[in-house]
Length: 155
Image 1 (cartoon, rainbow, N blue to C red):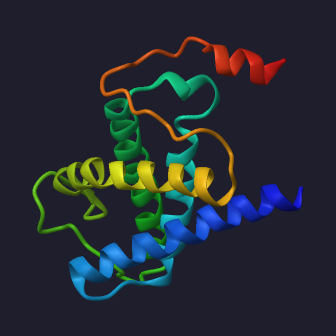
Image 2: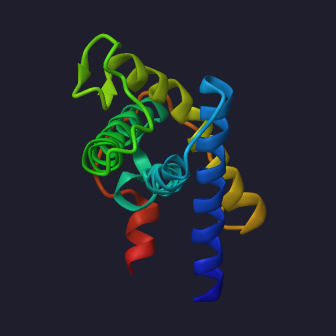
């Protein structure tokens, strides 16, 4: 129980700091809400190659990660920027934006950056928590069928 909580918190905190660091490098500043969002995104992205989704290729994981980050950024933006009126960010001047909270160019950036998140989360599990062998990334696999690893895990 304690090890599971430690693993989840380690992954969450890494994602929170990484998301904030990317924002600081990009914009020069960040907001606490971005760290909270980053931690949740990192946990979800890390779970994409577990269980039934373990057979997903890295491109499929990156695509799903980009969609997940974009949706969570929209929800966070609606709360933080629209409802609470904190005005943390605005994509209003960006092409193909939705309510100034998300936009297609940043979804594409999340797609590219998500590989680093996938790789880093896997390294945390392997190096810090001795969870499994080093993952081998398949580029184009996209199947939701149960894999042998998933069947053994469920038993």
